[in-house]
Length: 84
Image (cartoon, rainbow, N blue to C red; front, side, top):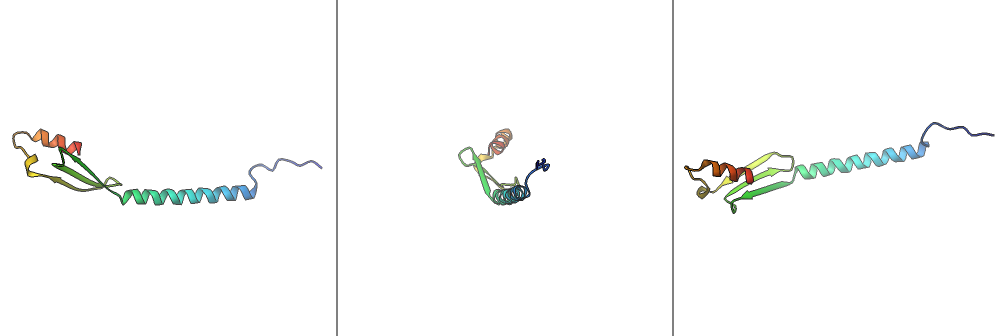
């Protein structure tokens, strides 16, 4: 008796693949949430400018020490903010 092609994956294999895909998706969502909740701090000019944001790119704060501000050189302050 000849056995024909059944047209695809075996039922058990497909179910197992779906379970693995769902588990992977859950792990990815958990990792994304963990990253989003991570606070990231950048600083420039020896800590004179400090920028804090969350892992999802939400800005939290910017701290500029008074000595970093030179009214005659605002461009330098702007550069320090970008560098932070």
